[in-house]
Image 1 (cartoon, rainbow over the protein chains, first blue to last red):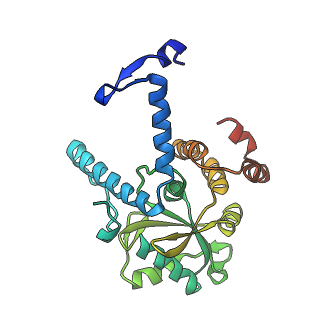
Image 2 (cartoon, one colour):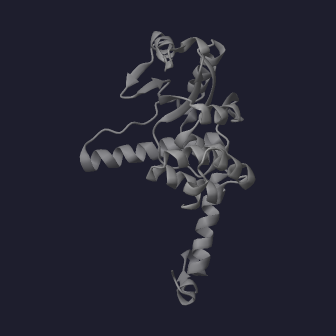
Length: 78
Length: 164
């Protein structure tokens, strides 16, 4: 468990914005909760993108095949 | 996935299944942030006519789908580009299917397991990847704890849940 000192550690972000480590993790949590609220259709688009990333990573490391849903382009992420 | 859902609805309309609900990773994604998964798990209540000597015959469903040109890929059947796995519901899952949430995907109606049942179904399966999904559900969506507690008690899953 990180101590109080660690959670108050300051991090310099883009544009010299300073936040604490605690705030950084709070923001991450908030991001995950917001992603959870996306419409189902948006989530499926992201899923297909993830399948494409996994496929290309898998191909370059092991040469194996991983599937990607072959659904119409309207349902895919741009 | 819209066309895949339309095919699932057709199966129900044609009486090949009594009802269905999406479960597994895709049902979890409905409630939480997107994560990698591949197959579409569909819990089905087969029609009475396919039950014979306590055997659940899925062949009428598969014959119908194959006649429509859908092909097998491993243990999945590829319906409109999506690998679908049909899971005949047991008593517990039948209740979960009956109480599934009616939702729309690109304007087409479908059904997704309610989050409380989804947690219980995943808990019963109990693999590491199922427990990870439960963790996401508990963190990222509203779960009716009273409803969940009642389901867990009814199906003897309370202790397992407490150990999470």
